[in-house]
Image 1 (cartoon, rainbow, N blue to C red):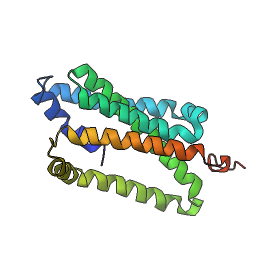
Image 2: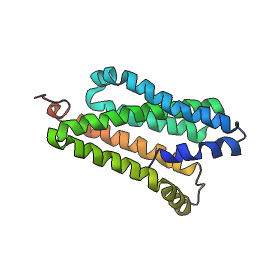
Image 3: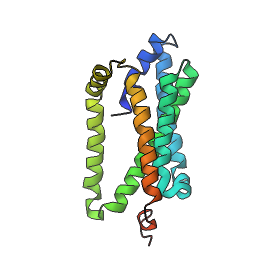
Image 4: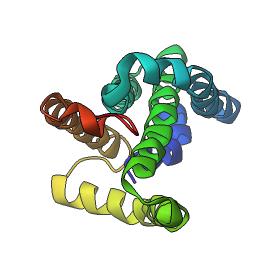
Length: 178
């Protein structure tokens, strides 16, 4: 739900800001996918290095990317922002699945991952309504304010997750660890 406003409003941001054309929006948005591909390529090594903090790294990357997108005044900043968001999201999703695999019994993993994906898609469905609600409550633009809001939520979530993982016992960081 937090990512969709960036994806849905990119064309509007580019056109209203006189930053480019619809083709520019396509290039910028494709960088989200490229970022996800980069994250997929490095996830294994990143997880070995960061282990219980991989999710934190992903959330901080998304927050950074959302900041770039929110404050961007050029196509290059938008490209950098969407790439960071793609990398962050490409770290978050496998991290979620890793955590799910650690806490769900093997027989229940399929159902648990299906529920996660269902809620992810539900977030995409409710995103336009959420953007309108945020705009109405805040009195801000429904174009950039949800991106700013996402930046704040991801940043706070990353901080809270990091702090809770600092206090987590080692046995919850990897399957089979004691």
